[in-house]
Length: 467
Image (cartoon, rainbow, N blue to C red):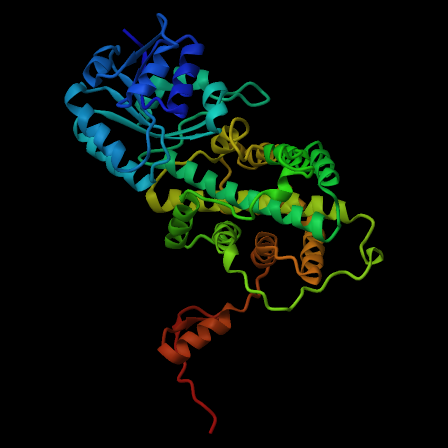
């Protein structure tokens, strides 16, 4: 009998199954796609079996059965669960490792609970290579079931610098997929921040592709040690096979998206989470899709007249900017997690979430260790900038962020996420925002009432217009 089952043998499912096998566990794989089964069967040995019959696949597994569903999210997952139910026994464990919407996971969790089937919704990050060599895993749902499969998940997960596996229990119901959704929203934000700093280096500092590659590589060994720094340096230095140029100069200026960023914005709006940087990053993807509609106005953006107007330490200013903007992206993501935990009555473990992202995933960076430290001892934080490290980082780097946005404005370079980062920081530390005028206007035209800053209670004014 095999110890673990995988349904769906395309690249992600196949690689996860091989990862499990490579760590000493026996695996059965199943797919409705015959070519996938045939390709998987080429790896067959005493620890790996391929099946094209669902009943045979289920019967090949030891009890309680542990089955990972690794297929396209949405209706296909419901169909697989429907087909599995008559073949399962109470106590069996299903894991959905796809990019499912957390509300679907909530629903499936409660439906399967009625049948005595344990359900885990698990975010998986790291792509094809991570699936085979060590992904970041974000499982949520039934904690008893998680403890049952934890030895396998801990074995296949990426390991951080201290050797800890990047997997732990996220929380009940759809919490695992919620955490993955937020991970993806943060990913949108940080990628957009990198692209804006690249734009500043190119169009304000006038650096070449090779020079920019060296700069990002240096930052990866400095203040912005991150997977995205590493791959940005590699992308910028790659020579083109079809021309004598660099590849980056011939990539169409359009960025695609799959929708998880949209999900985060939708839930963020319903929670009232101020995730402005993530929103701007998602909208920037929308803007890129409209690039073919760019208007030729004849108006050219103002450019710097000479290099003498630029400070000698401009590149350092941009490094400080990127470090702080990255912190804001993380802060907004963790703020939404905090608000979701309260709204949905979830016990989320923020320190564990940060630790889970330290290896194997796209947003891994050295800053996650600082986030871990901020949550040490279960410290309650509504905002990361309540922590001393992040508060001091803001004080130190905010002047650089202001200068970068100023240079960008003078040069006609759009910086939606850098500007949103600046506005966010200027707002959260400002007790005198002008929302009082908005509430006054609302009371004027709609008698919506207001509260006062000098006494308790709710008030309404009979406003008048001067004649």
